[in-house]
Image (cartoon, rainbow, N blue to C red):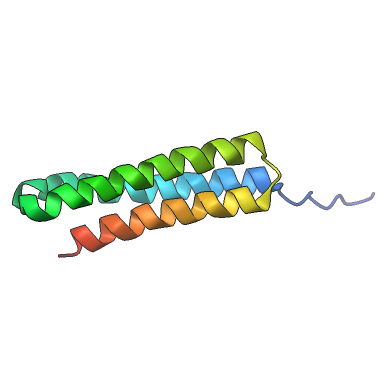
Length: 96
């Protein structure tokens, strides 16, 4: 009996798993952000919302690129960076 070695996951499979982890972290941090929104000064809230909107646009663009080129590790890398930026921004605001 020959034992089969499982195939290594594809770039797309790894990317989708990582994306789910990023989305889970973003969801948790976003809930905390919404909970704290009322106590954030308007002077801080406005630029923060602008920055989050920019990050969301970047996520959408890099997600499209990663979906169009599922085997391209560079596209996947840029998507991961975009998600990390959103997490970093949300952590910064929720840790205060």
